[in-house]
Image 1 (cartoon, rainbow, N blue to C red):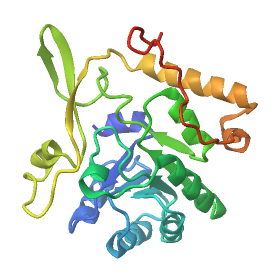
Image 2: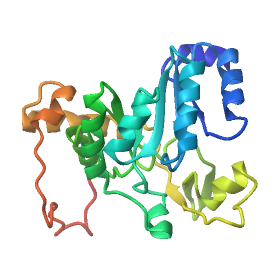
Image 3: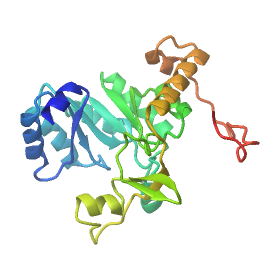
Image 4: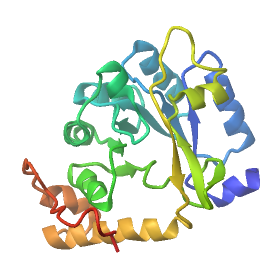
Length: 263
């Protein structure tokens, strides 16, 4: 395992903020010192406990790159950056298998959140990850255009050979199980079940097997490259300066949506 991680340099150790999580994180990094990235990952980053945990991580790991989230407002982005985080994860409720907005009524439009949070982060020399809400390459391009430094994808990568999830077969077709980390499936597997005082905030779906992820990755990259060509951005980092967003009622012509597939 250690040898594998030394080969794969861009791997982060992810942690929650539980009572023993900082100790577990230390043990992981002691065992695999090549890991240089940490991710403090919770569904709701709006708590004093979360901010303090980020501070503790910075004090314990002064040379590591720390990602923290999730939040959706500029004010909280600034607080986390000043507490020691380098990169902030932005997004509450936009994920394809997330039901937080439906179960709780809490959320923030992802594009608006990225625009606001990117402005706050860049003013302090920090960065943001747009986490969730993408359904196609154009959405990835919009996230970069709104100011995101990174884009995190879950549903778009689900169902591939390299993706996590159990493979099942129905009616001669192969499917992969994909579930949200606040779903009943996830809590049963990792937390002993859904606690009596809370509700599941995710769902479990079966996605038809999609083969190797390379085709999907190249489709996304090709879309983003074409975006840059359309708006006159010579480099990806120029995209946010070239992009202008306009509110529309309908973006796509769906006249043949029921009878065709994307090439």
